[in-house]
Length: 187
Image 1 (tube, rainbow, N blue to C red):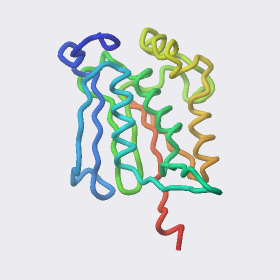
Image 2: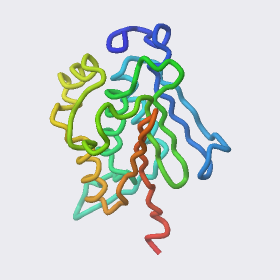
Image 3: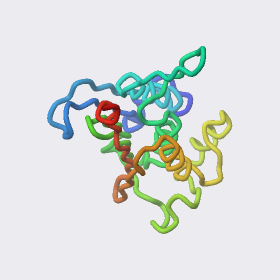
Image 4: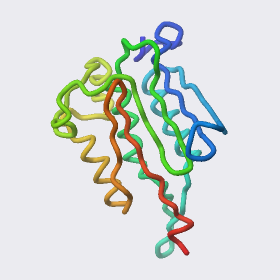
């Protein structure tokens, strides 16, 4: 149903991705909110598009162009975090959804279901909580099965000169990206 259903959220309401843009650094004021209720691939694309629309973008022009669009947090890191949330969330937990929250100072991508292995193995092992979803995403080349996603997120941020992401564990798993202050760094 999550992979090929026409209206997956009617059968599995916890399969949605909720994206929220907040004003400030807490959940006090909502500026925009979208619930994506399609299949997992559509939800992945819609969630990334929400991030792309709401994060800052700068242009880099070298030589005679064309210009290169650079998102404030590397696209690859955001895509990896969304895919991770889809693949590893606990779909048996009916009271929560994958949540993507954009604040003035950070982006948080969280999903219900903590780690399914020891915290010391985090970022070193690949173990899918949802092998059918993982298998589909592997076939369409959105994931591989070598346990490199967390390392890639860290590398993308390092290469962009950004802060290391924070990870939170518990009943939820969250990756937290610090947003750069481009205006302050340009003065």
